[in-house]
Amino acid sequence: MSKLQAGPDQQKNLASALSVARQFINTRAKRSRTTNLIGTRCERNLHPLEGAPTLYVLFPKAGGGQPQRIDLSFLLGFPNLEALFSESFRINFAALDHKTRIEYAGVLKRGLFRYLHARNLEEATPEDLNAELFDDFLLYLRRETKSDGKQLSTQTTRLRLTVIRSVLAGL
Image (cartoon, rainbow, N blue to C red):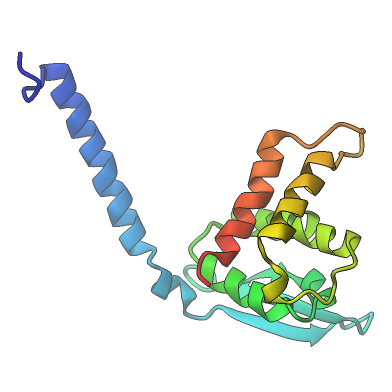
């Protein structure tokens, strides 16, 4: 059999792969970014009981009902980065599942923004987010420990970097 001819098993695998690819493309087309952005917004307010400022990103639910509210109030402690990250979160994560959005907000808070706070960089600007800062952030992640004293897993470190990359992807 030549390299260009496929056996029955290979043809079946190829057909299966093409089917999966078509399903993926169709799903992505249905969940296009433009459609998912309609109705999303950032909402700044005061907490009704505490009076503290709040920041939420609201994502409408398919089929109506109360929108999903993702609390990004931790960004308010970083005035020069707040608008950039909240708007980017709103735009880049509109097509994601609601549980993923909640997880990613927590990852940002526990990752980059905990690092910025630990380094007293609350006044950091977008221009400060450079290669040097991210090199130091990576070292910080490698030294960071969990409550049990163990280092963060490679998977956790990778997730913290991936979420930042995803937020900044559209800039």
